[in-house]
Length: 164
Image 1 (cartoon, rainbow, N blue to C red):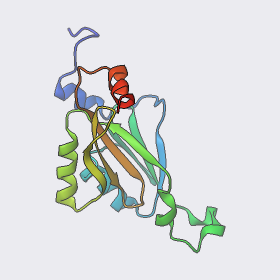
Image 2 (cartoon, rainbow, N blue to C red):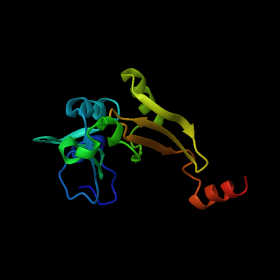
Image 3 (cartoon, rainbow, N blue to C red):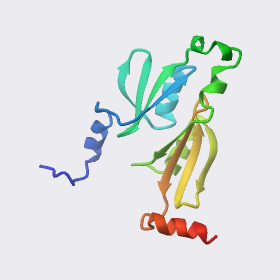
Image 4 (cartoon, helix red, strand yellow):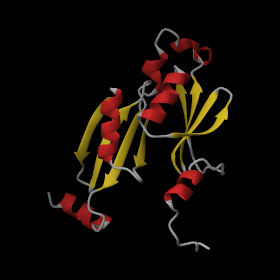
């Protein structure tokens, strides 16, 4: 019998990926094309569909990293009807996801096979990570990040920034 400190096996981890639980936070994102966006999140960003819901796509990258895609309703914003929703949807929003069971390079490889938009990266950051930033079909930005030196503590990384 596993103890609370045991790491889940890959099979256990995958089954937990679609468990329904109270989410401490999730992003609700309006999209212009549900099918295209849902496909993008699964194929390019590596999300899984949690539960089929009418008119909503509930997707999960990993435990506690969920998004809800909902169709954009332009009737709620008549003053913006002249502008395309795709120009409005992703404006100013980015989600940062710490990779697990994959690397930033794995994410980059998926983008290449799907001709996805890479905003920046893969690149090293001064705060001891590598990251890649993608733009989804509506302009929302997803930043996938991973630690470079897992032995380096945060304070040391920040001190090295101060000395530059």
